[in-house]
Length: 392
Ligand SMILES: Cc1cc2nc3c(=O)[nH]c(=O)nc-3n(C[C@H](O)[C@H](O)[C@H](O)COP(=O)(O)OP(=O)(O)OC[C@H]3O[C@@H](n4cnc5c(N)ncnc54)[C@H](O)[C@@H]3O)c2cc1C
Image (cartoon, rainbow, N blue to C red; front, side):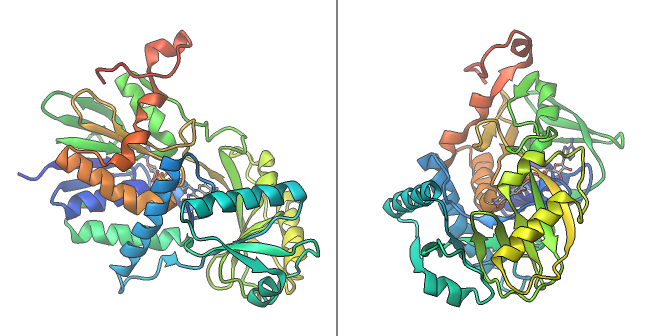
């Protein structure tokens, strides 16, 4: 009898594990309260990297995930390309940030992560429309890094899920989950029930909601608050005559190709104004500032306009690291929540599926068990530290 497994959440993490479970013979049903990719996964910068990701265990997980993405894309030659193997160019202007970048590069070299110096002339040759700040003498090229088109990636995961006999049920919220020694049971907003052997909670920033069903408090950054750790503006321009063919991290602006000549813009220092409750207009203060910075960076952008600007809400465990593992005594309910999900999805999809079907966790996951972020709800009122009793 194949295992019957439900995945709650059709973002990149939920779909990655769902198709991986189905490929390994499980009978998989994915539930989403809205539609695939409607959560954090549809508003993401989607830079696939292991750059500046501490501690070492997290760097190694992300570095392995870059390779997994490349293998996965190569295994689907007929699919629309979701992975752009472009690399990232980065430079810094001020002395302090330049020193920090050089320190990071030295550390990445010791880890065997590709980082090559590019002199000013090479930067100008690589990016013909660049207006390079006269202070910049060099930049760094991280050749293994990639960019992702989330929509195409999600489509490929869904196609794989369906090809393996998996099922997707959209627009149906899971409102309750119960567990016994024999099974897990989900109650849906439609009134239907699902019963099976295991489930994956891949509900991103909504994960704490269903965990309260277990009497557990999961410590996550509150993505509904105006908080630059949780929220970030992402803007997309109209098509522009700029030949940008890689990811660009510069002092004022992060820029990446966004399809058809469009550029995606992000400026982390502006995120102190990001508030999910207050959407910003494309021609408002933030949009105009992003365009000013873009014009300082590239020629040919005099008439540039922003087509859309959104406030992304991160799905981020409180310490910034993934939370991956069983949260129930009977090993039936698996939590899968992480920032950097665009980078990590294919690798985590495979590792979590292997763990759920074999009972053995990969050593790569051992640093990320969720117990460090969980505590009984009864302890929250008493302000107790986050912990999960050893039995769980
Ligand atoms: C501004 C920004 C920039 C980012 N940049 C990068 C980057 O450069 N590189 C990178 O690797 N990552 C990046 N990320 C992170 C990455 O986008 C996320 O880690 C990833 O999208 C999370 O995917 P997910 O599947 O966990 O969550 P989601 O995509 O949020 O999916 C969760 C799903 O669960 C569903 N759901 C919730 N509750 C229920 C319920 N009760 N019943 C049924 N369905 C439910 C929701 O509808 C949703 O579809 C960025 C994120 C943001 C916000």
